[in-house]
Image (cartoon, rainbow, N blue to C red; front, side, top):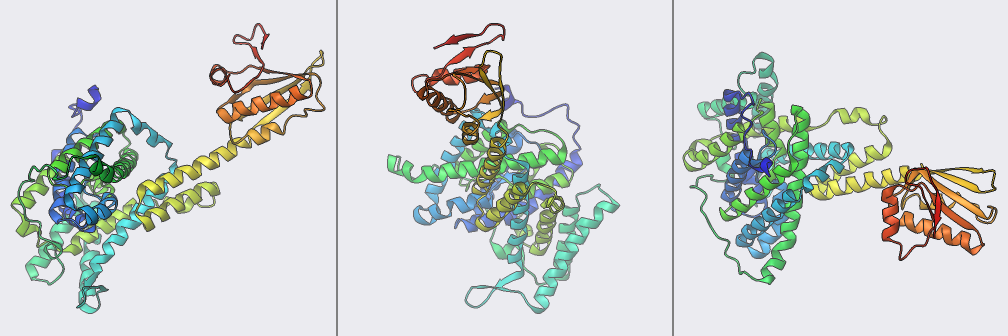
Amino acid sequence: MNQYFKLFDLSQNVDYRTEVLAGLTVALALIPEAVAFAMIAGLSPLTGLYAAFTIGLITSIFGGRPGMISGATGAVAVVITALAKTHGVEYIFATVVLAGLIQILAGLLRLGKFIRLVPHPVMFGFVNGLAIIIFLSQLDQFKAPDSTGTLQWLTGAPLLLMLGLVLLTMLIIWGLPKLTRTVPSSLVAILVVASIVIGLGIETKTVGDIASIQGGFPPFHLPAVPLSLEMLEIIFPYALIMAGVGLIESLLTLNLIDEITETRGQGNKECVAQGAANVVTGFFSGMGGCAMIGQSLINVSSGSRARLSGIVAAVMLLVFIMFGSGLIEQLPMAALTGVMIMVSIGTFEWASFKMIGKMPAADVLAGILVAVITVLLHNLALAVLVGVIISALVFAWEQAKRIRARKFMDEKGVKHYQIMGPLFFGSVTAFNEKFDVLGDPDEIIIDFQESRVADMSGIEALNRITERYQKVGKKLHLKHLSPDCLRLIKNAEKVVDVNIIEDPTYKLAVDTY
C-alpha cells in the first residue's frame, strides 16, 4: 500500500520554470475543451470546468504518472449524454461518484496490469483515432451558426482571418523550438495571437462566444437522488461504462507518456487516483472525467516531467474561473484551435503508414479498425476491446497451427506420439487429426514433454481420444504432463477419464488408473 501514499519523488530534478509555464499553457488549453465536453453532455459549462479542476488536481498529486493531465473528456461526455437527458444533472453526479468507487476497486484489485494485454497495433489505432478526433473537433471553429442556428462553414474574409490566425499559431509552435526552448511554444503562440487580436481589435470568435466561464469555488453538493435500489439500477450501467472507458483511456495515455518520456508509470496507482478524483468531483458539481491525451501531450511537449505542472494547471484554471474570466474570455479561439491541431499532428503515429506491407495483415487490420471505431463511434472502450479480441483470435489461430506430432514405434511395439505445441481450444481439431486409432498397435503413449494442455477444451480432447482408443480395445497413456496440466486434469477428474504415466522427476514411470 505504500505506493498509494508516496506522492512525490524528492530525488527528481525539477525544472520549476518549465513546470509552471507548461502548467499555464495546459490551463489555457483546458478551458475550451472542458466547456465543449460539458455542452456535448448537455450540462452547464461550469460542470466541465469544475471537473477539470478537481480531477486535474487530485490526479496530479496522487496519480501514477507524473506529467499526465486529467479532466473532463469527450469519452466520458458521450457516455453520460443519454442519462443527462432522461434523468438530469443530479443523476450524473451520483453516477460519477459510483464510477469513481468502481475505479478505486479496480486499482486496489490491481487490474491495471491487464492494460499490458493491449497489443501495439491496437495502441497505434487508438492513438491515430484520437489524433483524428482531436483534429475533426477543431473544424467546428471554422463554422458559424446561420439564422436558423445551423452551423455553416465560414466564407470570405472571416474564413481567411480564421485560417490566418490558426496558421500563425501553428507556425509559432513549429518554429519557436528551433530558436529557443526556454518557454513553451504553445504558450507563446497563444499570447502572441491573443495580443494581435486584442491589440488590433480584430473581430473573431473568442472563448467568451462559446460560454461564460465565470464562477466561484466548486460548491460541495450531495447528489439529490433517492437512495433506492431503483436509482442504483438506473445509474450502475452508466457508472460501469464510465469507469471502464475512463480507466482504458487513462491507462493507454499513461503508456503513451511512458514511451515518450522513456519512464514507467504505475497503472494501479493511477486507477485509484482516477477513482478518488471522480468521487470528489461528483460531490463538487463536476461531470467526471479521465486522462486527457491532448492536454497530456501539450504538457509533455512543453517540457514537463513532474507533478508540478498538473497542479499549476488545475490551480490556474480555478483562478481563471474565479478571478480571470473576463480576460480569458477574450482569448481568440483561433489560437487554441491552432494549438490543438498541432497536438493532433504530433499525436498521429505517421510511422504506422510505413509499417503497412511490413507488418502482418491482421495487425494492420486491427490498427485500422480500432482507429475507425474510435473516430466513428467515439467509443474508446469498444474500439480497444474489438482490437484486443481480433489480436487474440489471430494469435489463437496462429498458435493452433503450431501443434505437431512426431511419431515412432519403440522396440516393445508401443507407438509414441510426441506432441509439440500447445493443446487448447484452437488446436483441438488439428490434435485429433494426428492419430490413427484403427491402425495403431494395442498400446499408445502420448508424450507432452514439448507441449502443454492449456484449457478445458484440451482436457476434453484428451478424454475423447482416450474413449476412441478404448472403444477399439487399445490402451492409451499420457506422459510428461506438466504440474499445471496435471492440476487441470485432477480438477476435472469427475468428467474425464484418462491414464497418466506419472513422471515428475523423469526417473520412474508407473501407470495410474
